[in-house]
Image 1 (cartoon, one colour):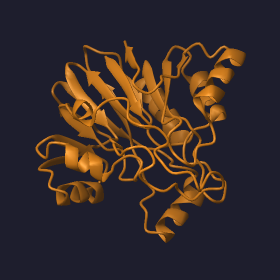
Image 2 (image 1 turned 45 degrees about the horizontal axis):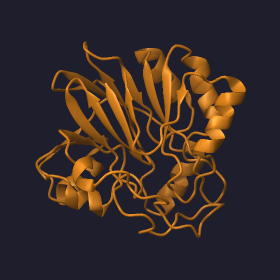
Image 3 (image 1 turned 90 degrees about the vertical axis):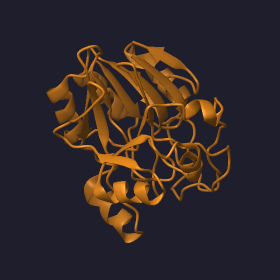
Length: 259
């Protein structure tokens, strides 16, 4: 298994000789305005450039889009990707959206699992921020609330869990208990909205993941790129040093991890 941290939640997973592109946000630095949040609403995003040329990033076998939010999918990805690629999504709404953009082969992942090239892909539940607070807010502005995570399983590889845009919650804990993943990718910049509610994990959430997966390797992704972040790679490295989080990896953009 090889995991390349591209930028933000965009990663490339090479698993059982198949290359997956996850959540491609491929626009240039500062091309879009920042999200409205309690902090940093005037900062444009992405805050950094891509570490590779787009042509290199999109040279993959399949794409997985955890949800159609503008920091996980954009027009640059839409224009650069081969329209015949397999694209995995979480719902009929997201499938129909992708098909409307000219893609020919979109498939909805299920919790029961989808087989692809001798790999089982399982959709997992998330809480993209506290459901009782964030879901009504999202619905009020016409933005979907739900996001998914994914578990990868193969006889030839360690089990990989990409938690997706989620806080620590019962749903994440249930996935860990069910699949006992050896490798876990968490989105960990603690992005917030106007009322201060977090959309994804912060350091306390990572502590929960570490506590419940003492033998797993945790990878912090979705770092240092969006306007509404409240935790940085520097913060995570300081936490790791103070609390001996030896199983926490904090890759830079462009860094490759091999398992």
